[in-house]
Length: 162
Image (cartoon, rainbow, N blue to C red; front, side, top):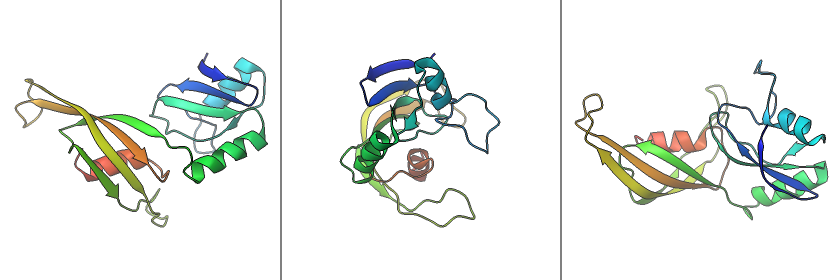
């Protein structure tokens, strides 16, 4: 059972747990996805408005009609709606910055423009050694993307060595 955070006549927002796909794909043998679970839960056909990676948890929007989904998806594409991701990173991330670095989904695909703005919200250090480091450092980071590439937040933060 998925947790419903908001629902009206056109849309439903759920709390997507990590480890589950937004919708079924030919590349995955998984039987369950957020879309199929929500369809069973609400007894209605659902249309995803946007996606989150399988490993990512967060708020996910679905529409009850294709028209409503297209309308809101267009607003995302026109950057009238912005997503903010919260990430916990190993290491102390700079206070703020921009990663403007093209990404590609796989080695055989072309690079596509990708831009992420980030802001460190908090940093912490624990006295426990990690590998060759004498302590464990972590940062809580807010990331806002102006593009939506495959694993964009992870890849951009990794390009900063986090």
